[in-house]
Amino acid sequence: MTNKTTTKKQVYDYIARNGIVSKAELMAQFELKINSMTRLLEELITENWLQEKGLGYSTGGRPPILYETNAHRGYILGLEISRIYSSMGLYDLHMNRLSLVRWTMDETMTPERFIDRVQETVDSFLVQHELAAQQIVGIGVGAVGPLDRERGLIVDPVLFPAAGWRDLPICRLLEERLGFPALLDNGANTALIGEHWALRSERYEHMLYVHAGAGLRSAVMSGGELVYGATDTEGAVGQMIIQAGGPRLRDNGNYGALEAFVSLQALESKVRELPVTAAAVTTTIAGQEQITFETMVRALAEGDADVLHIFNEAAAYLGIGLANLINVLHPEQVIIGGALLSAHETMFDTAIRVAEQNTYYFPKYKPLFSKGILKEDAVAAGAAVMVLKKMQL
Image 1 (cartoon, helix red, strand yellow):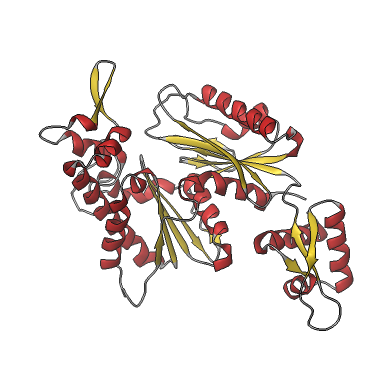
Image 2 (cartoon, one colour):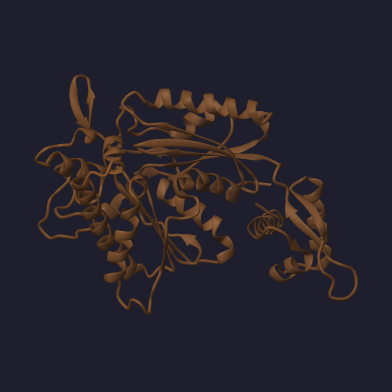
């Protein structure tokens, strides 16, 4: 990529992040002569990447021309691949969501059927919004790890209900079927990318994202950039030891790990131990009563005190895990998402209360806790933002 191309993309990205800007603001950000900046802006307008957005306030002389990116120069797909639900959204280049579809991941959702579902959804999006496939810039994928991001592989996801997901070249399969580029990152990272984008006017530099669902996942941002380790370890937060010699989940991983107290499997196990399982907690599948996430949520909605106690206990353990992370990473903003947090309103409050009680220097140091702006749409939206950031002009 030439210096001119790099600068062109940097200028575009700056305008995309900040919305509507003037040439003077751009001149203050980039070391370009005014003639060079003028030519670059004219080129971006000619190519339809930018458009003029009226005039700003004059401080003497002519009012400045304002610029913004063209939301309809292209469109981006964001895809979430998770253990409980998957979803896909269509976004314009201002990251406005135009459509979103969500579906359940069950034992029938093999990779082949999943790709079929994705293609069917893409086709319906194109028809609904009267778009041509050539207008799609690409598809971003936020998936359960571990992953090989460079090779576009889902390596060995645990707890997937369907077979066939190990060593899956998801990017290649999507590109072959859909005909446009695919980018992959783990879902926790794309969720944090999405939330950071949604909060970009706040200028947060240090953020922590924790997702509690079928498993536990986390992502960290420092200096406004995602922190990557030597390997993909989005699920490693679940192996944080919070009780030495404590229980172990699925006969692997660490004893006393956070996931043994805060995960869908851990909660299902606790509910099974209840002396008499309420009818609201069970469902009949193939002639046998089974406990599922949906039936536990139904029990919570119906006021089952025993199930609520189990969920709140898990939330307290999650708060301990959050405090450990906060004491090491010192984030400004902590976002907590996932199906378990949305199961009942007290889950979030309990987790935050315990986290604050165990945060060093609290209340002098008090990170802001939230469920995020995008909430359950964060993974898919962030996957689309990932494509926007890497998009070539």
